[in-house]
Image (cartoon, rainbow, N blue to C red; front, side):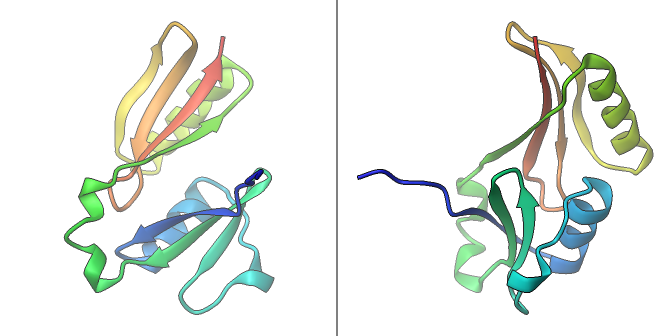
Length: 122
């Protein structure tokens, strides 16, 4: 059996705030023909990133299931520029551009505190 990713879904506490973050701050494009009242899909490379409101039964388990969403840029200058842009827009940065053995990395949080990284591979 060979599996392929269908989409990544992030359950969010405030759908409108998260749409603003992923569309207006990160610049992802919504896939309007696939959206519903409760599912907001975005182009995310070759897969779909979906936003959906948290269901009541998830509230007690949400923080027990952390994940990492990783984005990439082509140069250290682009990483520095994107990091400064996020900072100007009031995004919570947990790590500004730092060097690791494999890449340069900036880490920040979405409106629900989910960790997102922008990396520039060495």
